[in-house]
Each structure stands twice: as C-alpha cells, then as structure tokens.
Image (cartoon, rainbow, N blue to C red; front, side, top):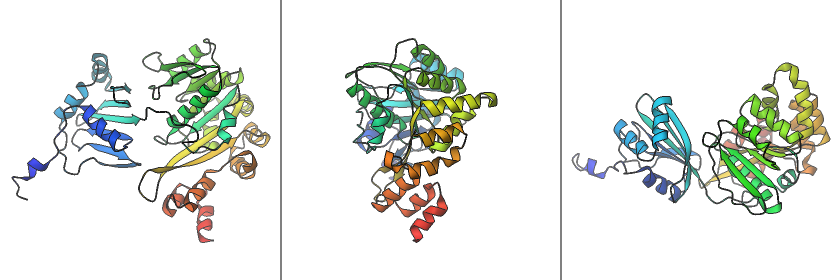
Length: 366
C-alpha cells in the first residue's frame, strides 16, 4: 500500500452520534466512547477496544460537533458552566445513558446502551429464591456489584415481576431512567433525578407521601438516602435499592458505616429486622469470547443472618451462606466454581475473582 493511498482507507468521523450508536446496538456493545485524540471505542463483552483499527483519531472540533449535535440548549449550558452533564438519551431507535464531560484535550462523550426490552428473572438465570425476596410487602432488597455488572437489568427484572404479580403502586427513582416500565398489574411512576427531582433523598421523601407499595431506589449513595430507605422498609414498604459493593458483608458494612457511631447499634437492629436479602453479582467473560456469564451471591435474611447483623459480626456471613444453601443462599465463590465446572469461565477468571483465593486454589489443586 502506498503512503498516498493510506488516508483513503481510514474510517472518517461519522456525521452524528446516532450513527455510532446504531452500529454499537447491531454488534451488542454495552458502551461507546467518543473521546478527543482517540479513535471511537466500544466495550463488547467487558473488553474495551477500538471499533475500527483504521479509524481516524477525533479532534477537539470533531467531539465538540458531535456533542453539540445531540445536546439540548439546557444541557449545553450545563456542560459549559459545570463541565459535565449526564442524562438519558432516547432517539427513536433506542435508549442510552449519556455522559458528556470537558477534559484537558477537549470533550469526551460516553454512552451506556440500555436494552429496551426488560428481561425476565428466568432469562437472566436468577435463582428462584429471588422471587421469594420480592413477595414480601415490606423490607429491603439490595442488588450490589461493580459498575457495569447488570444491577439495573436485575432491578428492572425484579420490578417487572412485581408489576406482573400484584396490583400495587410502584415508584422508581433513577438517575437517569433506564428501562421504561409499562404498567401491567401495577400503577407505575418513574422519576428521574435531575429532571423531575433534585436528589435521591428528596425523591424518596416525596415518594413516602405518594402512597407507594414498592419503591425502587436507583442508587443508595449517601446517609440521607440510606436512612430514608431503611425507614421506608420498616414502615411497610418494599424497597429495592443498589450499592456499588462486591459482596454481602461489604454491603452491610457500607450501609452501617455511613451512620454516626452513636446511631450504629440502633441501625444494626433496624437492618437486621427489615433486610430481606442481598443479591451481589458480577459479569465474567466467557471462555469462548462470546458474552459474559453472571456470577451471583445470594444472602437471605434468616435468624442466623439477622444475629450476625445485629451483633456487628458481618465477617461471619460467609459461613452463614455456606450453611444456608437449603434456603437458597449462594456464596460468590460457589457461583464461580459452578460456572468454571460448566466450562463457561476460565480458571484464571475464577481465581482472580474469588473471595477466598486460598480455598479456590485448593479446589483447583484437589
């Protein structure tokens, strides 16, 4: 190939963000990155790679043009005054979580592709025990895991299950609204933080005055939100929430640690009584390179679980889960071992993600 021919073979910058998004949807990517001084990048099956190896790198002018082509005047003002803006973007062909930020080199645009069809509990491969957690009419169910592990997808499946089974009032508080939940048996209200309300805490305070039966809190990230969620769970509402924690013990430590020390004994008692269960999940790349498998830890609030929480002995929860398999409890390490035994994930992934690495090594060496 001559030097003169090379530029003609480069993939140019496309005309609109929608052109990239359609391409990402076609090839089942989960995220799209359009960044200054970089080629267009996507995340497929957990791996971040350039969409085309021969694409031109974007100039500051390119990313600015792409950003301003789909932002509203209000969002442009927010970007220029605050330096970042995030929101749900909904062209006619899909729904996306969008984030636009100013950085040293120029503008960066990131999209999370949201599947518009809500998958069921069966389709996600969630154990039947999760259904028992959402059949309560009060209490707290937490879905936890790192960013991009499918927490929103699991929450949407749980809310949709309630929507099909009951005649209740469901309120979802999200940032931004991801899955659009059409009413089936239930009356459903979806509120977006930043659009319909100032914060999760403000929305949760408002929700308690709206006669809800089920409240879904997109993110429990501060003392006020966590405190209100626990109070709502105690006063006769089923509360579903998410946290960015890796397992059940760390989730409970995070919930308790946001409170001042003088309140923790009381909060431990409240949580031990109101918690229904914790679903902790992570997505592990499959050995065949085609998608990711879900590893899932499930804690159910039995008398033994409640005693650990009340006494502040969260480090004992792993043992409780080991002995609680008869009520549907699963440890993360058992879930990883099961995926490995089925040939779905590699030994390296299994070992690197294990909570008890010594025990996992013993499993492989036995």
